[in-house]
Image 1 (cartoon, rainbow, N blue to C red):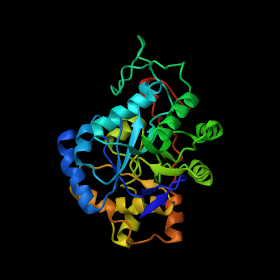
Image 2: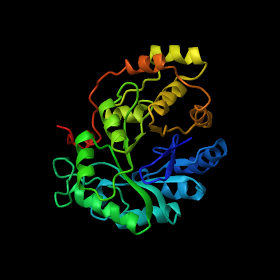
Image 3: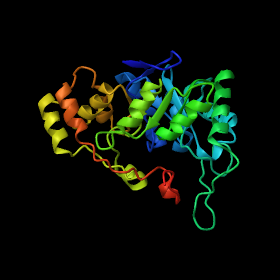
Image 4: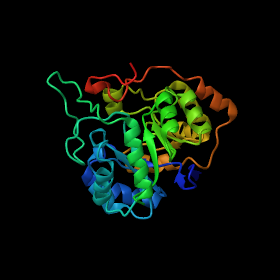
Length: 298
């Protein structure tokens, strides 16, 4: 099952996110994922496992992400990721976060801090400048589609205004506890596919870094899982798919990799979709740059 992007290319609606998957386990996991049926793999320079991912990828939809410190070196950073992944092109390349930081060397993905421990922001590179460099990647044939990640509704609107090549995707945190319905609907209205990078609410790492809260222990979702004879994760992923969003859950366990892909043979009723909608907690995300000592949305 795939979604058609605004440039005509198709992207599978369930992908495998490889953040925090150790390199030594990567090859076997991706090999098994392909056997299960996965054809969409979400990679990033900052995950520091591109060489291991590249060894196993063939015939899949490959997503890469530009790190903050490489906003002024987009082409070089993209080529560096392609070389590590052993690819001739990327299907999708995203701006990882809407912030440019001090350059520390292509592909190093460091986050330079000043003497007070605050992130060194590069004030010479605007998001518009970064986006036009992303557009160059398309004209050069290095990537098929480009997009954004962790952009709120205002930054997304701005990107639409200054872009020549519209973003095909906005990859964001969205799940039953943090639904972001206005942003999702805005993106979809303007032809931008929404990908949920934390579709289950996140594990311990997401809670520590971003303040995300897992919804897997929610009693309402547990009740729905019993009703449909599915796992809670499958219920949540199916909810995401029925919102017409792409979901890229992360796991290092083979059994969960299999479970997460078994979401195409059942459908939630409208009543149950509405019930999940009522679980919105309206908590304000501890935004992606907060742990660097800045608040993107202050």
